[in-house]
Length: 214
Ligand SMILES: Cc1cc2nc3c(=O)[nH]c(=O)nc-3n(C[C@H](O)[C@H](O)[C@H](O)COP(=O)(O)O)c2cc1C
Image (cartoon, rainbow, N blue to C red):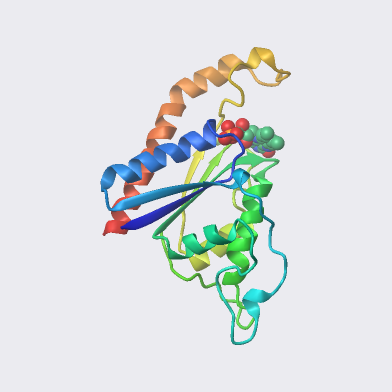
């Protein structure tokens, strides 16, 4: 069996980010029964960011998997052994969510060597970075995964990207103070793009599974 880990960094269980990740999972699973897909919802876990405990850097016992013990530890250990990784997050104030960033601190700090500043994960693997946002391709404030993307690229390999723009933030715009958005324009964009975005997620799942199976 080969395993793909999906890390959902959004709070909403059935909205845009979760839907994109679900489609990815369907695409990956469709390729072969040899592909196992596991989704972890960060908002369902009680965990901290890097505690700066330096346990991963102890002389003679250095580790490239986080040693701090909380509910994230088994997830980080599972990722270390996985064959593919998908990270998904809505964009909040131009960045991935705080939960995603906090997770990434725990994932990446043990990769970093302070001896030679190299970044080494236990295993390299295909990676997909997913973002969903209000912004448009030509007008958005997203820094995406920001500086963490460098760490991911160095330690795991060059990631693929998938972005869903101009998403529906609520089901019914009439019920909320969201006057800056035209629901009509949102609907038009969604009608033209959302199914394609989901299809792109499905195809990315297939592509990653096929790559893993060689
Ligand atoms: C706290 C918060 C901050 C947001 N900041 C941005 C932003 O800076 N740029 C943007 O394009 N969208 C922003 N959005 C919109 C979300 O990124 C967008 O609705 C996303 O698709 C939500 O994902 P979800 O449906 O999976 O929850 C923000 C939403 C929230 C709740």
